[in-house]
Image: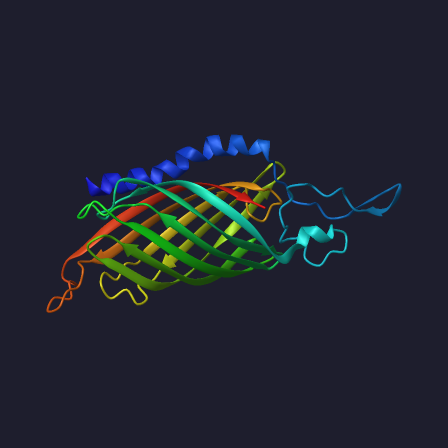
Length: 255
């Protein structure tokens, strides 16, 4: 039964790709095409596309608009949405937060903070706050690799937990004339979480890609984690191991 439930959670993102892709036509995103020459005259630069993706295949071409290479100036954003949880948390919770994002031809970075009102089932109370920072190097073909660190703290009326965790992985920006997306896979390590040693992959999808000039995005993240029973004096809890997952749907606005 647990295997069927996890498979269903993996299936949900695929089923949602169709309507999200259709909705993106409201905010189309396209690659800025490089300068082309014609038989009747010299090469001319195309008109910049409002939601153009930072094209990793343009290299150092002088033909592209200067804005197509992105900017090191951080752009703030805010988000809000719904989280579906397992692992002893309430089944559904709201999540809100914000951060800053940097997108250039070869560099991606973000710093983000958020809060989720997911109560623990053992106490019926609680919320979780977290911060994270990521940086990546992007290749000319749109693949990017890197990592970062994150901190989270759970507080209930009965107890509290907190931990720092490193994460590493990568992803790819995909762009077409009227469509773009970003897919990313990170592996979150236990870090200094000695109580439960939570770890596992996080898979994220953005529509359109944050490399575009769009102001509005849909982000979906699924986490599949493995952990052991909470350690207590005299019992490290490592003999009892469990799996859990979460699924988060958020709408984002970048200013």
